[in-house]
Image 1 (cartoon, rainbow, N blue to C red):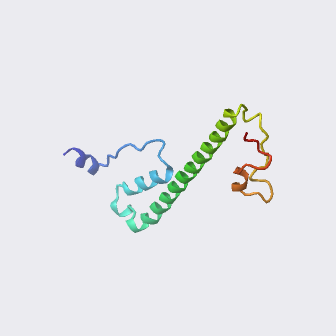
Image 2 (tube, rainbow, N blue to C red; image 1 turned 30 degrees about the vertical axis):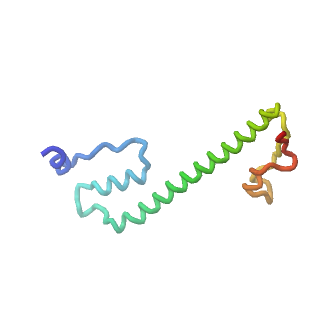
Image 3 (cartoon, rainbow, N blue to C red; image 1 turned 60 degrees about the horizontal axis):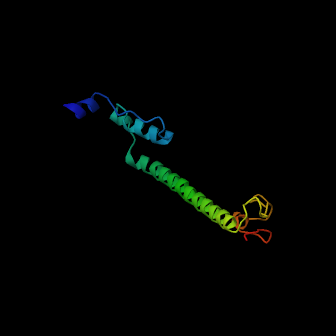
Length: 116
């Protein structure tokens, strides 16, 4: 009875509203009432691999953002320890969009940066 009967009768768990669309699509395809219309795993595998890569990319971006924030807080803390504040120092206004300037170079203190 119970769960097995509910599934046979087409009942499925509720899909959370915040579930990414691609996950929702896969669930709904796999739960199709007609088993012949359900996807084969060999068709799902590349989609699942793409989704896993996207999640890993998002997580890596979050880790990189956290590391940048930590570096910024460390610089601000050093500046505060020396009696100044970030607004009291002279900081480069160059940005990663400046011609010829990489993101790595933009995050590095420049000769005009006052950290003391």
